[in-house]
Length: 151
View 1 (tube, rainbow, N blue to C red):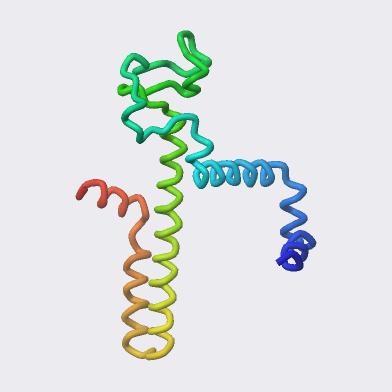
View 2: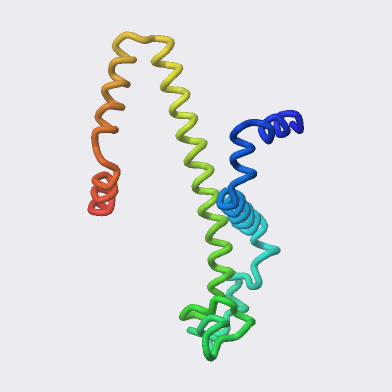
């Protein structure tokens, strides 16, 4: 593992990454976001799912830097008195899980279809290629509008 990592750092891509402050900042922000979402139970200041801790008197508090804000709730609270920062951290965990599962599912389906097309070839390969052509012919914004309109 360390040999592979050292080889990557010695490559042209590794040099470009090391010399680019924007790439380093983006990697650091991504690492912090992933760390916070994975360890949300320890990082989040409040538990947004614990209904016993809800305080309706703290509803709709502004962020800490605004007038009337409190350092207890850095990003403020919602209508029910839940901390917005904690809700964002726990929501990032759910988004990360959805993203990883969808990527793994699409990789599994893609590898399976590729193996089937490579093994049998012929009409199955032609059918799968025409199916891919149809899917790629629609612009992504049109597909998003179609999904939003149906849902």
